[in-house]
Image 1 (cartoon, rainbow, N blue to C red):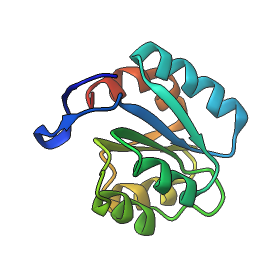
Image 2 (image 1 turned 60 degrees about the vertical axis):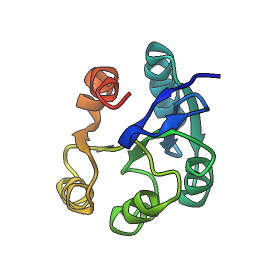
Image 3 (image 1 turned 45 degrees about the vertical axis):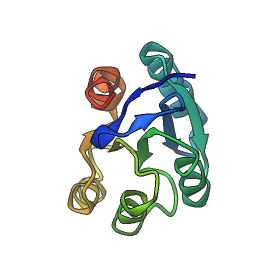
Length: 131
C-alpha cells in the first residue's frame, strides 16, 4: 500500500492506478507497458460505467481512447471530475484525423488531449506529470 500526497494535497491510502477506457486490445497492451514503466496498476475498462465505478475505488489517472464507441467527453469528463474520488488527471487520445473528437475532449476539460501516435510515443512522460 502506498501512502503519499495526491491531487489537491489529499493523503492517498491506496496505490495510484491508471484507468484506461478502451475496447481495443492492442491499445490496452501498449498502455500496460506505460503503466508498468510508471509503477501504476492498469485497470482497463470497456465502458464508461465501468470506468466511473473504477474511479470511485481510489486514486487514479484516467486515459480515454476517443476511438472507443459511445464516448462522449462532454458527458463523461464532468462526471469524473465531480466524483468523490476525482482523478488526478484525465488524458484523452485519438486518431489525429478525428479533429472534432479531439476538440470535444479539449473543450470538455481534459488535462491533455493527444493524437494516438503522440500518446503512444510520449504517454509515459506526459502521465508522469500527474503522479
